[in-house]
Length: 301
Image 1 (cartoon, rainbow, N blue to C red):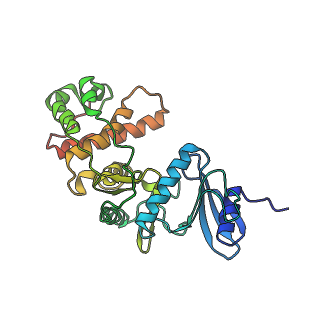
Image 2: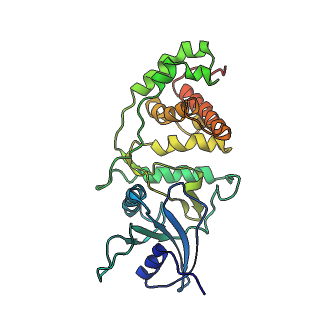
């Protein structure tokens, strides 16, 4: 006997006028949202994402709203949005369900145990971010929610950078004030649409260019917001150093890297392997900010 599909899958298939032949749950995504790649009885393959609680519902509504703005050239095409009740007054689902095209056939740099960037991939991703910035400020999108508070003044004053082995005391004495000042001078402006969580496992490359997925943290933000978030992790994965990819103003680099550095040297417990990843990112972030400010390269303790 064939098992019944999950409710989100059944509702999504019905909304498309089809039945679900088979469905799999990809091992991706960090939230509690449901995720299914679904093969329909008309031969199509679609991606079904269903909210499961108030938090994932809020994120899914954000994702659906942004995808309507950016269109299928930068994200997956939206095939269905199930919210509320159908024409007969029957609830679709306990929470909203988003149905998009399945991008499994694209090249996913993080699709295996080791992230692999091919020649030209990084350029295609950065070109995609430039295209996203060209959308300007469309109506109806809210500001991104992850613009961080200043971290560098505290990092400088309490010597966590030294204790974490990122710099020696002499370097911090000479340049700490410049680091702190760049963070305080940061100004948030809703200039462009930003994805909010661009990283190697949230994108794929197709013959037509890059396609970004998981727009849960998207909204309006500063130009180069996504670039600043992405470039340090790209470098960690074998890509180019951030300071070789065009100039970004220090007051934008400072806040968007300071929270990563604060986590790396902060008191919150985390597995040793994760602490190591954050420390490696922190060294990349600090070197980038120092270069942007015209400071001498940081000297580790």
